[in-house]
Length: 201
Image 1 (spheres, rainbow, N blue to C red):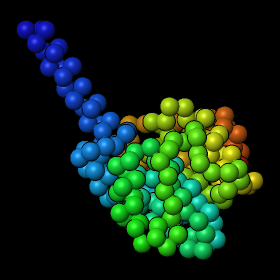
Image 2 (image 1 turned 90 degrees about the vertical axis):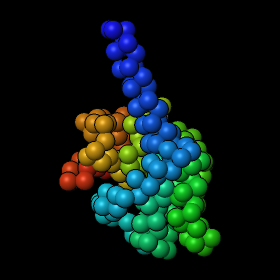
Image 3 (image 1 turned 30 degrees about the horizontal axis):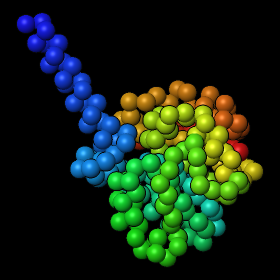
């Protein structure tokens, strides 16, 4: 009887881990598309993050882990004379981001790349602003990823790390992660939608 209960618990945990992995951590297939649809429902969080970053019309903006591309779309509306780029390791998310932003991509306003935070396909000092939302806690090495983002930021450029209040991740280490990655002038902001930390390159 005990063995049967243990097997049921293990099976439940395994199924839940599989669903979380394929919906949100490394989205792929039907579960990934469903996860992307759920991510697209939260317009408030990326809009708030962009407010905190104070996006200017001519800014170059990078989003690492843009998911289905809502943040990129909102960033492009603000940086309408600049450049907006997204890097994601999920082909499923990139397909959804392309579909959402097709016209902006064709117009050269948004560019998308398959890749990871710790190896970005950009030259040094390329961007004015960078952000990652509900993403950094699933990177293999968050500090290495943040250092790589810092490399691509111009001197004085700003980064935002944010998570929704529904995330299982904790914002308690935001400040230490940014410090370890070489960022300064760090501030933590909390709102009903979640938590966002800002840093300067």
